[in-house]
Length: 162
Image (cartoon, rainbow, N blue to C red; front, side, top):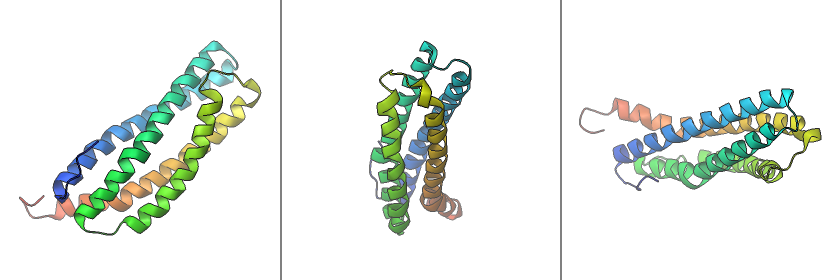
């Protein structure tokens, strides 16, 4: 977790690094999800599907946790360091994102233990995919509304101040 810093440039760079790692984790979630969807078409109820479900569930929980306990807080700290008020946007978007978390955790609870539900797997995977898409859009709006604005400020800052 980045150190909270009141220097806008240092806070920006710490958050930039955190976001780079977190978005890489997001790509891993998407890749794992896609592989599971493809495999479930061919081998529903197989041991391979069970293993892929566990791996996806572990990644999902890690991804969601880092978002809630690190990324969103650090984005808010960055807004404070830059002296702008992103809190209204952040509060709205973080609340909407939190709504998706409950569904993701319910999915993890159902499938993360290795129990098989072949009769609902395809439907649940489809719903999870739609939910992840909406969550990613909300997260991207949060990043754009806070961090991307600060990126522009950093690029526009006179040499030596950023």
